[in-house]
Length: 195
Ligand SMILES: [Fe+2]
Image 1 (tube, rainbow, N blue to C red):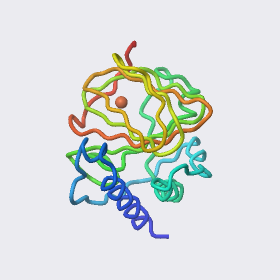
Image 2: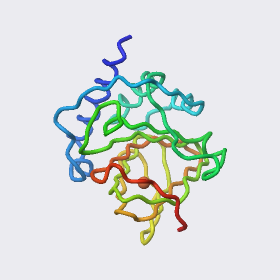
Image 3: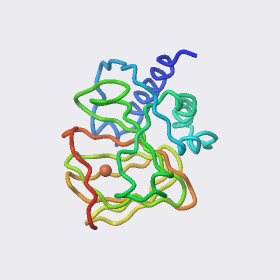
């Protein structure tokens, strides 16, 4: 199996998704050319839950299948420490930077992450300077952000977070895989905040 080929397949699917979705296109353009970076895989126990994830949309099915196949080659991250978010959260959450300054494809213009939450997970209130768009690929989650009505998002729905706007995410009986995009201030620090 050619690892680079699977990464390129995922990139092509992301471009297709962009072509067919106005929320994504309006938020940011994807960089024209991206250099593939051969990063070391970093695996986490929680990622086994991404396998056998039943797709709920024909528009995201291929992406889900590719991620399941690609998973052992991905540089999965968690960033947070147990002290800040608790051990149970770290058993339920993982993300990776697909495109960006430290991504599997290099870009200085945007960061595109994939982020996964298991069932019954609360991602605590936090903020960052970068403007952000969440786009749900599979499953469901409740999105809360300061000053706005909470909303449960399902596949192909998105939610914008302003610069430094506190936000949180909760899953219930469904796991959730989303894309997260930052379009500026790519070196922003994520800070845990009070609501
Ligand atoms: Fe965020």
